[in-house]
Amino acid sequence: MPLYAFARRRVSGIQEAQDLTQEFFLKLLEKNSLAAASPERGRFRSFLLTSLKHFLANEWDRANAQKRGGGRKRMSLDWETGESRLSLEPAHSDTPEREFERQWALALLDVVVSRLQNEVTTAGKSRHFELLKETLTGSRAAIDYAAVAVELAISEDAARQAASRLRKRYRELLREEVAATVESDSDVEDEIGRLLAALGT
Image (cartoon, rainbow, N blue to C red; front, side, top):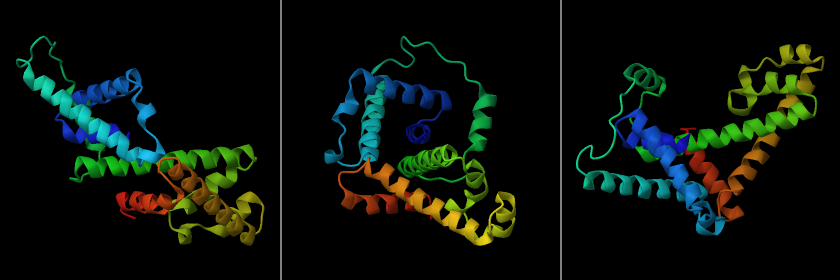
């Protein structure tokens, strides 16, 4: 979750980051703040990040205005679980903003892949997707098209064409998802470029 990833790098504890992220979403829903988000006002990604930054700043001010621990029950942290979760995170020292961008890009690509998989499965070609999904983001040279062709009982050329159609549809769905988060069609390419940059590709 991109917003949690940002909070996790801004605060010291996993539990605190989880609590703050949950509280942020509750406030968004309670105040109907998402109604203020619109493509005309800029990228949805930027709206969410700015909103979270303001929320965290307000929470920090509120917490520091109180006496340390005043009125709040102290939490007992599960250090073992916390450390095991931390060990699953990538070993880099990106800023909270860069980690948010990276997680946003990953979440958006997950949505695109899920949509594509649903389409292909609905068309009765789930095995095609399983065998060719590597071509979406991985090296095409790594795919053994001859083996795929045998598995699907089609020619090798047909397997390559199927992979090409899959990639084309993937790009179309990616554009659709990105277009829903930016002001105009002219911003789509720039946003895709930013997403790819966030992933280091």
